[in-house]
Length: 378
Image (cartoon, rainbow, N blue to C red; front, side):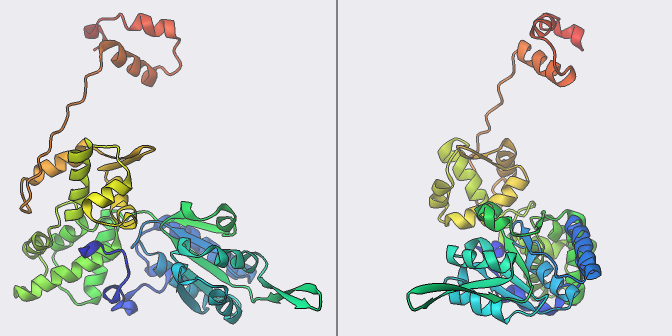
């Protein structure tokens, strides 16, 4: 899967000491930062535990980093686990009992938890207690084990997969957006500075343009371009070195990889631009549905190359034009046929203009306007 591997690996964690430790050091996501600063300050002033926080958004935007920052800002312990690893009740109970007041329990991919774990968390989040049932003779008694107040921070790429009762128990909901170029440039400069990698302005711009609005991808690209810099004997990452690296990785000017282009082309060639279901797409390109939905679709949708409809996925003319413009750049010739849009007839054009410019116009007035000659309308 190359640069877009959705899973965190040693590759991403080799420089954990470089991660921002305070909100003031965190780059981008201004709306998220501004809100968290208020919530944190309020909790300090009230001498209260921060409410539970749900962080949602595509992979690689800094949700784990922000969760860690919250623990640092509060000055408490940070416990990091993943949702899919929580299968049995004892997996979470021992962790909850061990938490101290104000500790931050971070559950990444929280949508992957089992329903059993979710039901245990209901009373733990709401009342800071764990109910246990024990049998005494012929009777059953419910015992409540008190927990120390803590902050649960959940991160998800699939906010809609959480049940409404569970989602409602998070007092703070924060959604992460893809990064703009300016913030990515700042991220790249910071990483290169910390890793002692010389880089020119053109080198920074080249990496930022191909980072798909995602700091994690930007940091991976820096390392791969650095490899080319070292092997080629260059003293810095510049435009030439970056161009060589991206040609080797088959990453185009927009940051699309081979699989991105395959998705677009298969929908165009075999399904006449769509709509088509994601299962069919995954089978055609040889990837699982999760990878298509979580890794590739968000960016293709973000740049207007792919749209999701109730009937399935469709590719846009912009996506097809992009394939045409590549012109066999990576050894693949895309046989793309872009259908010209049907021209609107005279009456449709005039009625559209009237809806936009005049608002609520009576139908009889619209019919009268439609009789006006086009030359008079100019």
